[in-house]
Amino acid sequence: MPEPDVSSEDCLQLKNYKLPLELDGILSIESIYSSDCSFPEDGSFENKEDVLTLEIRNIGTEMLKLARVFIVTDKNEYLFEITSLPEDSVMLVFEKNGSRASADEEVQNIRLENTVFFENGASLQKDLFEISEFNKVMNVRNITKDRDFSTVYVYFKKRNADGKYFGGITFRAKVSSLKAGELKQISVPDFSTDDSEVVFVEYVQI
Image (cartoon, rainbow, N blue to C red; front, side, top):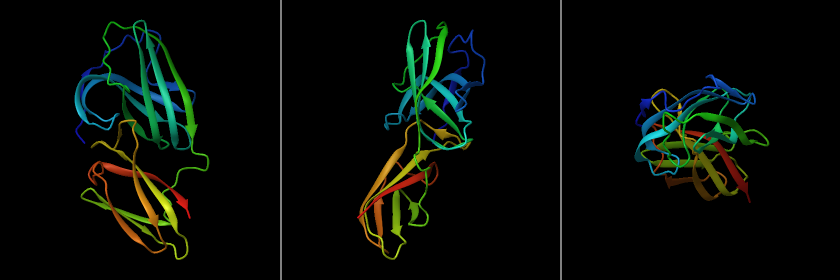
């Protein structure tokens, strides 16, 4: 995963805020800057310049399923959507629409909304499935002896070379009709063993 190039640490005027900034005891904004990046938030990885970027940490005690951070300036409102962020992990999240910010914009409000946690905690379901990946192919094996599943969803995220999650987006791979003891292979174009990590697994049992 290409590293974003930091264009400007002073992309916004933070007169009334000091970083790191804690939000509701759940997230901490470690830094705010503009960056040139392979934009991940829409899944396109299109090259974009001067995208408003947050480096954000989960300071809570459990994985965060969803949260939205709004930054309101005297000129614009910016949205950052965070999904599937484990506790004590750091993410680079890019403005949802790939927006730029100008250095003369003054921040008036930063708020956290729509916070959602996993009802029963996030799990890799290692007692049910064995998952391996190679060259954009994912192998999913049902290791149970007597349980059939109509659908298995494998959720994964991108990481950069520093180990930070790259983008708020979470990707999903789907396996249909996986019987006890069965192994299935699926093509997952967005998954690479070099820069991707499975973060949780969900299933529907027959």
